[in-house]
Amino acid sequence: MKAILLDGFGGPERMQLGDAPDPRPAPGEVLIRVAATSVNRPDIVQREGHYPPPPGAPEILGLECSGTIEGLGAGVSGFTRGQRVAALLSGGGYAELAAVDARHVIPLPDSTSFEEGACLCEAYITAYMNLFLNARLADGETVLLHGGGGGVTTAAMQIVRALAPASRMIVTASRSKLERVAALGAEPAVDYREEDFVDAVRRATGDRGADVILDHIGGPYLERNLRALAVGGRLALIGTMGGRKAEIDLGRLLVKRQEIIGSVLRPRSAEEKASIIARFRDAVMPLVAERRIVPIVDRIYPLGSAADAHRRMERGEHFGKIVLSTGWTG
Image (cartoon, rainbow, N blue to C red):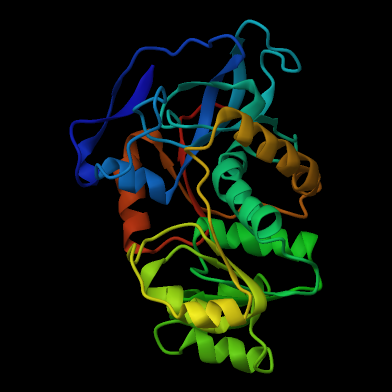
């Protein structure tokens, strides 16, 4: 099969289209003929040599894909060859074929394109898991989302609007993305370079603060996130793009009864992932089928142009998800 291979760690130029052995589905797995995959921030970190795949996972980049079932491992039921699906992967998405635990596969509605389906399993599951399972966002609460325009944040906005329509979303973004973030429901959309988001949250909530914050910046935002958080508020931390260390006032944390919830998806056990995916499938996929939630595709590149796709993400030019297409149409 054709796949994106690394000739060492470093910049996007390390990725080249080459030949790799076809994977074979083990018992309990399905083999997917990949139509599309998407670029996620962990792909870049892995390419740079700072995020090794879990034991037993493919070295090939790619945490999700869409396509059709090519083969079934022993003991698999509920899927048929040729069926359209999307899947959460531990690796291997930047390729023409991917083998994956059947429990991590979701039937793809006919109303959803392969390019849209390639966006679902990493960003949308991450957003749903952290906001609704971990941070327990309730309808009518206020949520602060950082990084408006990124894949997880645009996914989070759509899911909040669908599952918690009475909730208020405050979203930070760069100036060039404010209008599009506002169109997705941000009230307000905050230019994080020009305005302190703590002040913006306080004004928007009558000095109460946000009930839930979803953050991928980490260290530099931690103390301000806690100041922006309401009494009893929950901070869902999903990344450390800005740094891994910070100093906070533990007294304020205690008095305000706040929670800091750290979470990652990729290293979890197969059983944990299966449970999360099942809940996502029940809660979110009917909305996808009805096109009440439609993944936002920023740009589609052919698989061989993965380096250009990474460069676009690194420049922060994207809004939504960057997709890689193998050309397979089913």
